[in-house]
Length: 220
Image 1 (cartoon, rainbow, N blue to C red):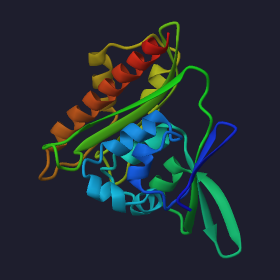
Image 2 (spheres, helix red, strand yellow; image 1 turned 90 degrees about the horizontal axis):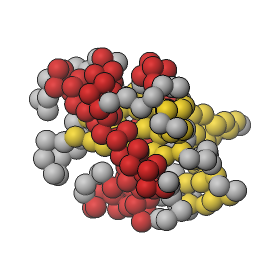
Image 3 (cartoon, rainbow, N blue to C red; image 1 turned 135 degrees about the horizontal axis):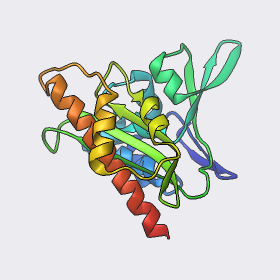
Image 4 (tube, rainbow, N blue to C red; image 1 turned 90 degrees about the vertical axis):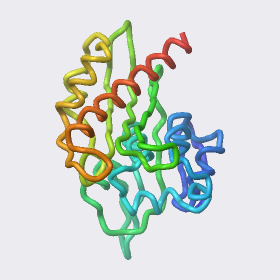
């Protein structure tokens, strides 16, 4: 239950795999390793497990946005039944059951993924976080998946932003920041006002896309 196994390009991660192992294990996709590394305390990463993190479903998660961006699924087991559901569906409406595995599908050719977060101090949890995966063909966006943490009661997928970008030329940073900011309705708290979170959500989405573009160009 704590192993990472690759079968025909599909990565299967046991729920007892620690977050630090996600950072260290080369079988884990680079995007997920980067997202796990955003949890700044190594002591926490050495103790926390991927299954436990998903079950606790923190709205400010750095890790869940990337799992959604990678189109990950998880296995759930209950007495007499077992099923597999998308991580995005699980965090939006948690389903009773024991998490038995997390499955990352083989990415399509040319697919890139990146994440960004914003925190008040180097050791604090994220105020907002974002992850995305995208295919970029001839400077156009194809099939983006974008998820953001810290703007609702759970990590959310920005489907309206995805639809607006799909098939279009790469947007400017300012355009994407404004588009993503308009798509979220965060509440304010002691770590930041609603307006601050709204703006920063757009910023981290735009920065994540910039990083993804950099990866694409680096592979060319």
